[in-house]
Image 1 (spheres, helix red, strand yellow):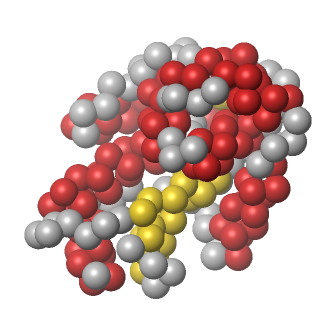
Image 2 (tube, rainbow, N blue to C red; image 1 turned 180 degrees about the vertical axis):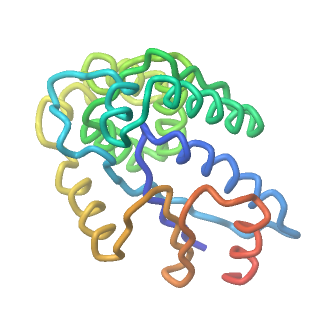
Length: 208
């Protein structure tokens, strides 16, 4: 069973959705062999690639939130994440262009390290407040996930896997994906959002 998951590494609901989906697999009676394939989605594809900016300021501008509203949303998100065993630290985090981070994940896929790379990038961003935007930081995080430093650096310096990221985005547009996470099970069942583990498990049962 193949599950394609469109997500963005700066999306807090995507990390939560990943955890809930993993719990759903464990809930099944006789869990099926599930191949989970990360597909790239960018919440802010127009962000400059050569820097980062305040995530809080970006969200306040995008949604028209006041500072207290932004703080309240962050507090709520941290509580939701904690319920899934995730340690979010959102205050003071930056945002930026995730195109290169998605390229790293595509590189990792070919090495059998996709999940390890995705987990490392999520944890770096949401828990450790590390950059996932500049090449130096991405290379170090890739090495943590088991990738080769020199190969990763060469890939990032060039345009490796850029077309693969673009194809992911085009496929998302064809499916009219407007928000993430977005799950497609065996090209038959689509689930939008970080649903509960029970809902994911029922979808997997139906697909099986």
